[in-house]
Image (cartoon, rainbow, N blue to C red):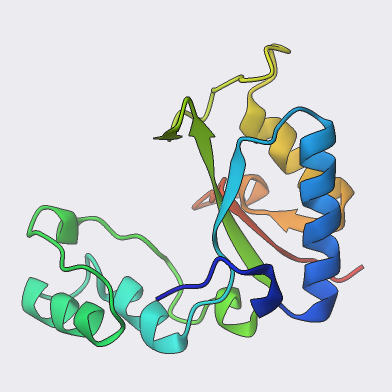
Length: 151
């Protein structure tokens, strides 16, 4: 099962993530929560299979790494585009927005009421902290994702 622990990141990534989360809190964006820091290659493989392999194969791989089984409908959706992920090298973090105690997938949510979508502020702060933000990628944008950026 994927980790949410900051200690499971490389020391240099821990430093950037702590700075990033401090800046999020200072900006009134404390509703963002970590949902994945490190994941094993076996878990990445199981996630990559989703939407690409049969339900039986996907659920067998998910069982091996402690993930819940999927339904046929869920297995129609790809959830990752990379067979090798930077999460396995401990230099990426995925976040989610927790609004009114619930998971929020609205990319235009504006909890701090400043007329700027919170995910846009999230990305700007990530970049200012020396991280690459998946929301800036040209294709397959990944708004919840930040990763190490060589400076």
